[in-house]
Length: 157
Image 1 (spheres, rainbow, N blue to C red):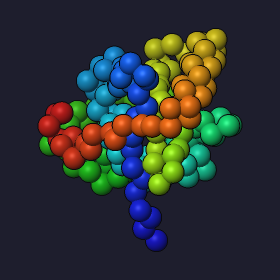
Image 2: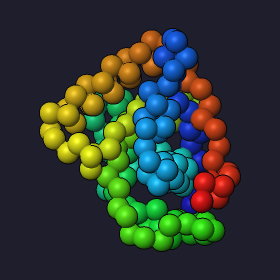
Image 3: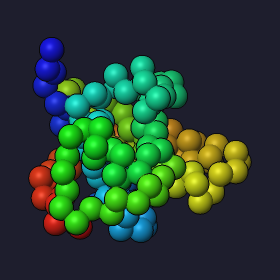
Image 4: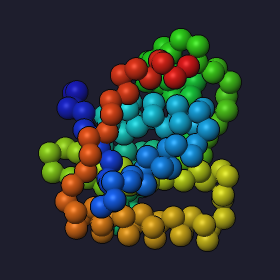
């Protein structure tokens, strides 16, 4: 049974900045490609059902963690994407993306971090606290910006 894909959006702070967009821009190009592909092909398709798999975890109170721990090549192969010029090395990533949901089958991306770069429990706890703060702000604002569709993901390679 095919399910309708979720719409991906990102939360913006009152000043117009997006913690998720900032997180994404701070990743190296390879990691950014991995995250974009995983969000587009896995999170957008599964939504909160990712929490019933190794890809996700419900953190409580409407906050979720999308767990990316595969290489670009592995993710592309698993979802049947052929990306010309793709790095076929097995460079595994360890990225966490925080999200919540909104009415109308919408995933709202809040932020994320590179767990491989900073594996310390204190750092991770701090990131979860920040995500909870962003969740409260998103609920207060009640708005999210439509995330740009990655239909041209091939252009990144």
